[in-house]
Amino acid sequence: MTSSLATLPIATPRVPDFEAIPPDLTCRPQWVVWREEHVPGRDNATKPPYSPITRQRADVSDPTTWATFEQARAAYEDGAYDGVGYVLTADDGIVGWDVDGCRNASTGVVNGAADHLIALLDSYTEVSPSGEGIRIFTRGTLPSGGNRKGTIEVYDRARYLTVTGGVSATLVKSPIAVTKSRASTQQSSVAPRLSNSAT
Image (tube, rainbow, N blue to C red; front, side):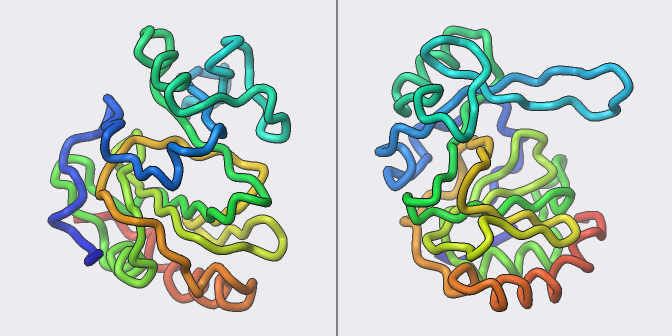
């Protein structure tokens, strides 16, 4: 897959494109639904996960609160939730990259550093629900379960990421996510530039 500016959808993905989500994710029963909730005293809305089955709050450490992709889609289509999400686990071999504030929601253009990261990882990439960030899913592991540097967050367990659908591609193993030193090196070189607004 080649990156880039032209391939990421321009519109803010308020309605998930379920058909674009790769089977590497949809085949696993690690799905939740979410909705925006506003907490007094906080500027930004939160996106807590809910079980598609019980409709109670989900727990990323408790598989009994997750569901299949089909069940999550059905719960979303009932109209009570704003989207679906995928729970990362220690044994699924999936790494989720979450990059905020790197995309212009009006034009669909991502900044140069994010575009570089998309090309480097060369894996399934989609736009975040806000339209201002991106998610990338690769194959690999992280020694400590996750890393954060500036606007980049990288996790392989005990987190859930919202999933919207986007650029379709087969998930590939990313050498950057194999060792902590490589992941940290990549984040250190890219993160300082990701704070710049996309144009």
